[in-house]
Amino acid sequence: MKKILLATTALVLAAGAASAQQVTTKAPFTVTLGGSIRSDFIIVSDEAANSASREARLDYRLTLKAEAKAENGLTYGFNARLRNNQNGSGQARQDVVGADTKFVYLSGSWGKIELGDTLAVDSQFEIQAPSVGIGQADYAFGIDTGLFSYYHANEGEFDTKLVYYTPVFAGFQAGISYTPEKGSAGRDNARSKYVTGSGNDYRDLISLGATYTREFGDVALTAGAGVQWGDQKDTSATVKSTLGDYAAWHVGATLGYKGFVFGGHYFNNGETGLAKGDDQIGWQLGLTYETGPIAVGVNYARVETDYAARGRKDDTDIAWGLGAAYQLAPGLSLQGDVIFFDAESATSGLKAGKKNNEGTLFTFRTRVDF
Image (tube, rainbow, N blue to C red):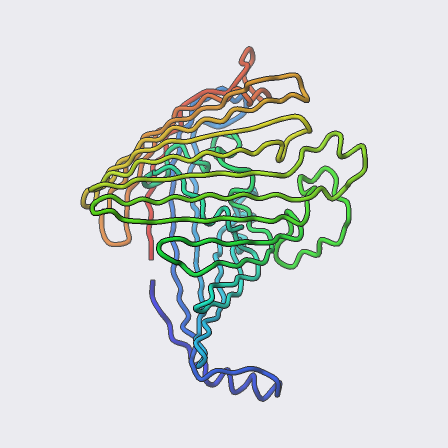
């Protein structure tokens, strides 16, 4: 990343003139700009009836950070990640840039506080199964095949929240976060007491998480765990009898030894995001090896869902993938994945006579990091 020192002294003086109560610091802000650009070409062969067999896409992520340190030792600032629109269609929608991560923070010897749109602590501390490059059979590949995430229910959510992290002590760190409204971010005013049919039927989400890292000679251990739970917005008898409770937890760990990394991840979503009486669990294992500019990996993911409310039991979705990455030059890498999947839970939008979606996904990526 390149650092750009701004003339903050002049800005602070101007702000102080506008408001006599403005708190100032002699230390200037350091503004850091960085990011990545990912150009993908994808080939898919599956049982979806109306899906194209090839796709090309560009995903860019720009990170912006402004940080300062006060004379009393307090570190504070702003952090954001800007991305192009991934969910729209057409060039006009794709040219819209939005920020999924955006928060202010304060930190010191007592820990760190984040205020804004960021991940819950359980997601920050999750230890995923190892992967290289694109990620093989991790949660992200489902975007291309129309399948759901192979991770815990609140993976990748950037709702507005309050977060606290403890300092790191002997390799151990913990945290807690509070999200007033599920699905509410940025300038959204989630004042409605009841939300129906939107998937954001929960409020007052509490998340706990912890991680531990330790090295024993050539062996590196990393472990993490987290849990999140919340309340239903609508507590009427009709909703409570059909909407599943919100509670998800997960654990994961990896072991590294001389270029090899092996590990796994397990989650239990319970009824979260499902109907009352449904249940969902999943797990993943992975092994990677890195030497010089080359890295290779293989992993396997499995999700088992019981749709008791629909009379269907033991739907199993599996995916396993092989991947490689090559560092062609500083900041430039070539990456490739092949993923084999079989989703019993995908029962609609299929070709005639097909009861589940199975297929193969190839992805080739050119990635630039700066």
